[in-house]
Length: 153
Image (cartoon, rainbow, N blue to C red; front, side, top):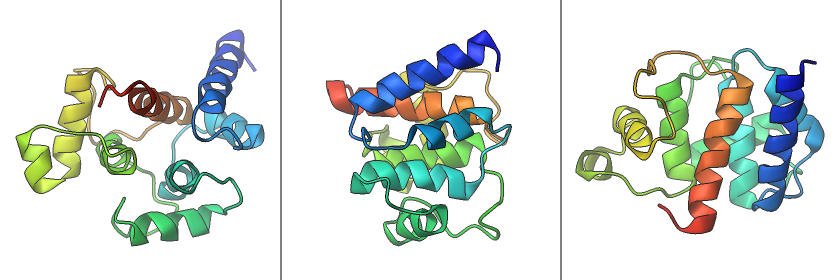
């Protein structure tokens, strides 16, 4: 593991550890960091762990929870890779982040992505249809958790 990845792992564990998901397994964070492209199940796991404040949940149960809670739509394949736009939508709904008028009206992933760009959580030149690496997904999730914790919604 490179020094950059070790630093990122320690930073993510620290930030996630100080937030609501403090009970979360370090193994899940480490595995996510090494993931070259995140699936719906993997993203749903982190959202569900935050929402239910427990890491005693499988990825499949987490996806079912997220679908039932309206955090994401039913993917054609649970192992389908999530796009940056879909992850942004999942984050906006999971963390109850406020958005602009178009996001408020539609709750669409497109406007969630645009809102995340406006908040500075996603780069202005990012492609909404791109897949997301595990480390980038954790950075986005950590940004959302931090926004919730400091009240910067």
